[in-house]
Image (cartoon, rainbow, N blue to C red; front, top):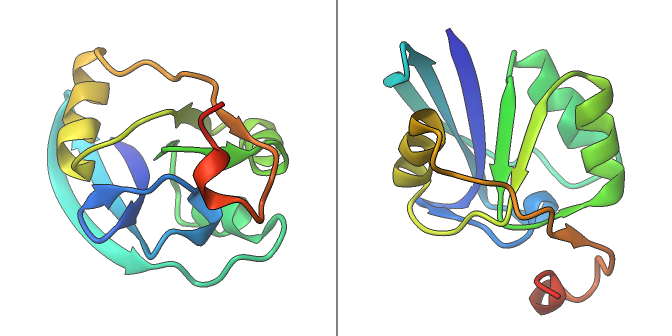
Length: 119
């Protein structure tokens, strides 16, 4: 069983991880989604969300963009980071499970500029 969190605005992958509205959490077995839920973003504080998601048992995080600090913490916890994703959270998760979703490595460096994550 793997647990995948998708940083989202409702059902769509968000451009900026820390400022997402919610996380769509998908549990998968044998590359099939067996359970899904949406949880609100508990708040953006440096280093908080990676630990929050780790404590929930998340194995993979998918987002449009993400800051380097968060990526480092996820990697320290052994959580796979997939960034550069866009579209419907469930569709993106299914693509990941099929092996057809690649991380672009799009790291956000400017937290105050939401539109500049794809440089």
